[in-house]
Image (cartoon, rainbow, N blue to C red; front, side, top):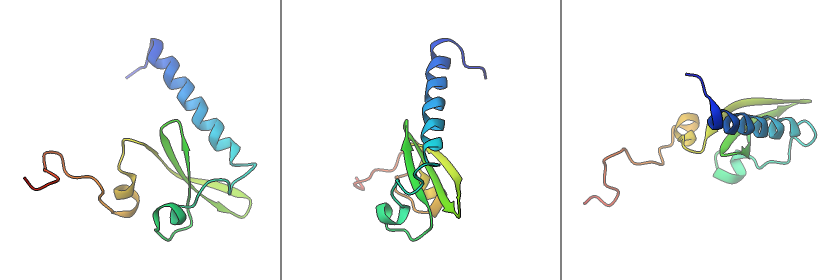
Amino acid sequence: MEIEGEAKIRWTKKVSNITKSIRGLSDAPYKCPTVESMLGIANPYYFLHADNYYIFYKVEKEAVLISDIYSEREDFMEKLFGIKLRMPEGQNYWGE
């Protein structure tokens, strides 16, 4: 699937913003919150929010290692930690 026209321009800008944010970690790798401080789940990862995406990374010696990148629409809690926060589609939250 090839992206064309306005969609291609928007996507190119989005990717540029995300990569710029990631490159900024080289100057300040500890500027983002840890997953543990935000979610209470003990692990060595930090997360950066950029252009509707969550970038998970850790810092080892002098290197920033990107682990995963998720859209805000994705359930990263389930994918990374096995914690389901969303109800299956069609299931009524209130049990009615």
